[in-house]
Image (cartoon, rainbow, N blue to C red):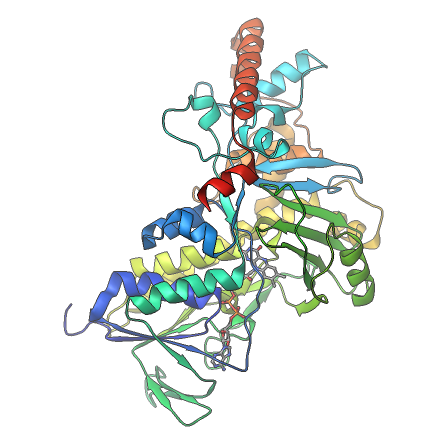
Length: 498
Ligand SMILES: Cc1cc2nc3c(=O)[nH]c(=O)nc-3n(C[C@H](O)[C@H](O)[C@H](O)COP(=O)(O)OP(=O)(O)OC[C@H]3O[C@@H](n4cnc5c(N)ncnc54)[C@H](O)[C@@H]3O)c2cc1C
């Protein structure tokens, strides 16, 4: 390390974001850099955040976590995607699985071919039958994809559901073993350099003073440093994502353990169901302008499939993002940098991305503003891409049965999203704005699931023989069916490894 290298990093916050930041920093920087994590004994963590995207596997692997040990210690289950209920209309049910609808043909999305077959044959089974992840989820089977499986049955991915507090504790042990120093204390004052405005030290309630070179703000919604000190500002997206409240409650687990999250649309929002080994996590995300907290609790409790283990916990939020996540020597990661409702489990994914980008653009003591600019550009883009994908779920639904849904149907949406919807509606094609974000198949899942059927498909597909195409699709469907039937149940697989 050069003499100009950062020698001390202070992380404020011991929630998921704090420990997800501490563990990789400790691994990458080793003893060359002192890392301190401060957590307040008085201010709790948000304590939710239990469903993830497949990228969490790469994050865990990069840390060298043992897969089976992780599943055991965090009470994790496997997640093949999300089942959406009542979103397109009441009674509508579709699955957003991790993976495509069968293999691509000549680099074209299989759904393009399905559209042609469905037009020629009114009895064509649903495109979902070509999704291996969906077939597995519907029959509660799970096994990770492995190399020598036929390509058709390998075309899926998976993520985890886990207990958020156990995951933070697991990463804490990992980080502390690698030299991260954990300090309990509440930050009450922030010292800044009188000329540069850089943060020089944090003062704790008990008088202790913690100096540092780089400060990572993982203090949750409050954004203690990024907003409290630097007044970063916040882009409020509530006009297109009106939900501003949530209630969360665990309940007793029921068998079998399902390898997917369930999201059920309600009259002023939606509820989640996340199965864990030891309990089921449930929550209701809603807009308190369209329903009361009492009614939201009633809907949540009525929908539980096991006995409630606690009273519902109330949370409030404003959807949006900090205008800048990195200012001077302060980088915000986690809820301090922004919040999008957990409909597609994206917050932990944005934490993974943010810590990856911080390591990629790690500053030295000169803190070149160009590094902050690039980090801010990447974080801003990711929030906007995810925002559009979540707004899509609300915008193209056919539900008009409540004031909330009527509002969603008529609300203004970003031009980028309108273009996405128009392109799909007119031609069946999808814009890939973010190659590292939600795939073509994910967009197809949501739009077709909600009832958007494209008017046209790719004209080049008409050049393929219809009979051969039909036979190919039948073969793929049978192969998926056979492969899934031979897989262990999700419970059995967890039993084997955990
Ligand atoms: C209803 C809901 C459901 C969600 N579901 C999902 C999901 O399924 N999937 C997903 O990916 N994400 C989800 N999220 C988001 C996820 O919970 C968060 O991204 C994640 O928990 C990170 O939170 P955090 O660590 O940033 O903040 P917090 O958990 O709030 O932690 C803040 C930390 O800062 C410390 N702190 C605060 N002030 C001070 C101070 N003055 N001095 C010292 N320490 C201080 C606190 O003690 C605490 O340790 C959900 C969020 C909500 C609200």
